Image (cartoon, rainbow, N blue to C red):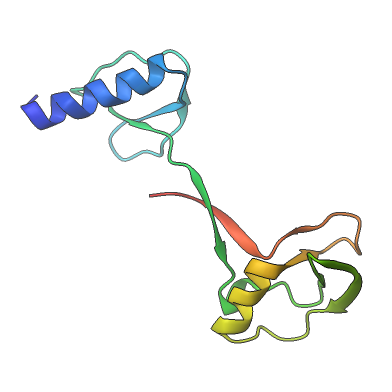
Length: 116
């Protein structure tokens, strides 16, 4: 390992000691979590699990037919009938929430994904 790789290994191992979730990866595989890392840096990769990030919907992600409401006016609801433009989707992301189960559960107007 070179100095930069050693610094990264120390950072990941310290995160594990601090209670953060660590993931490992064999060549050509995904990143499962590990509760008991072997720290075999020559055949595995290790990383701190990326934080999830909520981002506004793209046009393809808008749940047409879902209910939407403003966070500040919970009594006013409407059905999502179009995908809106980027400005509308950003406004929904900031100011609204949606339900796909007829108002039983309300969720943010966006998509959660792992940070990179």
